[in-house]
Length: 287
Length: 161
Image (cartoon, rainbow over all chains, first blue to last red; front, side):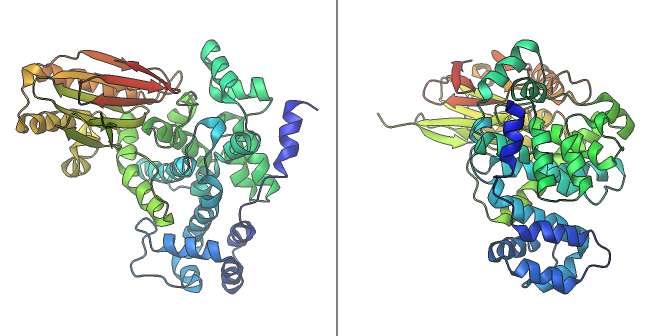
């Protein structure tokens, strides 16, 4: 078995996000969904319910008055917000652990993930475009492959880093050379296995190679840039650092300027903190 | 001897110290700049972690927190240190960070941050004693108040700047 095949085989053994999250995200994609059924699915999972209510009352998700039950959250927040909230709540316990292989202390990957989701939406706002509905969720889940490689498989980043450094290669290309697969593809395979919607899986798969996606998607362009912004801001950055290449083509077709980049980064910091505090996770260190 | 007390500086923040048992530290500088200023005669020092080059990106945020921006942050930091009794001509100024994405021709935030620092220091007629900027690696920056020693850590290895 090649290293690649070995990694793919192990994806099936990774502990799932709460199944309620997957069910709810699929339900939320259906315009005829039954709100009552959705609330029942969520209420079945007490941990998820707690996180959902905390987030629903956080500044970022903008509840004007306090939301005290799942039913109220489902009715008042709307499908789009609910999807973001549920994925954040579902990802929190999975992404909050230490990711050893990538040199990420507890809480760091979660904060980085939130930063990518928040930055992608803020970037759309600054550009004056409408972010597709799956933008936030795709950004949020886009580094989930690191959990598989860095925790479950305890991948050693040292040879990957050395190769990236010596050959001036991007980190994900060095991963491909050494492991036969990069963490974006691992993440996409994992989310596909968990039966998350295809448009989310695709954004995650092509995050570092946005021109490779078969069907162009604005959400991917936004997440690709948002990921770079998150890395530049240093929030939740591991040993791989900033060793990724932003696409000129994507920058051009989005009409990015340094002014828009700076405005986006200036807005994102506080918003990330709002979401992060909403989950009730204590800060482990500086950021 | 007591162990040094670590004071953490978050993104878009500045902390100062006048206590020799303290060490100011900021973690994971990406494109951001970690700027240290230290008056060895009076043991007064500060560390700032600035996110962006110029306050024009968000005058609103800059009013609330100048330390988000290199341009206004450096001036605010200088005023603070002078207020504490530090003298400009004694100040030892060092910087680390300013990394950029690999082969980046798009954002260049790190490069722009470094340029902004050089500009503001020139305008303030201050010199930079040491710098470790650029590349694609995240850095941690320390200022030890007792000695004024500034050090940079990457991948678990620490060196004096």
